[in-house]
Each structure stands twice: as structure tokens, then as C-alpha cells.
Image (cartoon, rainbow, N blue to C red):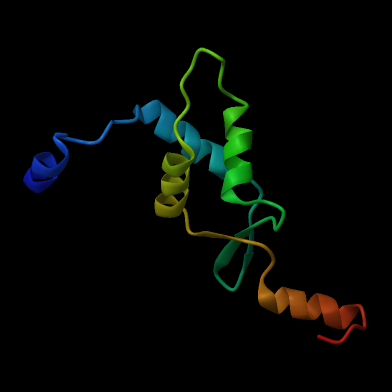
Length: 101
């Protein structure tokens, strides 16, 4: 921490209010999740940027929302989620439709 202060002149990073952090966590929890072999998946049409844009719709014009990197950091550190369909499920789906992989 001392080294960071000497280099940047900043004592500590800007603190985001806990209600904002908790709002991001609740927002991510609101998306449908499927599970396969212990891995949890969000729908394949989603990504963190799309989720963030949906999150911004909850803010009023006079409120300052957190940044995309902050939202992404919460997503990566608080959740163990992937996007898309599990590879094994995709193979089953192809076999059911008579297509070759």
C-alpha cells in the first residue's frame, strides 16, 4: 500500500458504496442459470457487456453508475459462471438432429 501511495499519490482506491456492490450481485443473480456436470452456465446470448447495459437501465439520470470494469470485476470475483451451453450438451443436441459434428 505504501508503494502504491508513493507511485500514484493515492492512499486507497475509490470506494464504491456497498449498496451498489450488492445491487450488482443481485442483478447477476436475477439471470437464469443452467447447470451441467457442476458447471453453471448463463444463456449463450449474454455476455458481461450486455448484462452491464441491462444493469444501467436501473439508474436514474442523476445517479452515477459504477463502471463496466467494476461490474465485470464483481462478476468475475463473486460468481463462478460461464456463458453458453455445455459442450457435452451441444454434442447431444447435434446427435439428436442427425447432423455430424
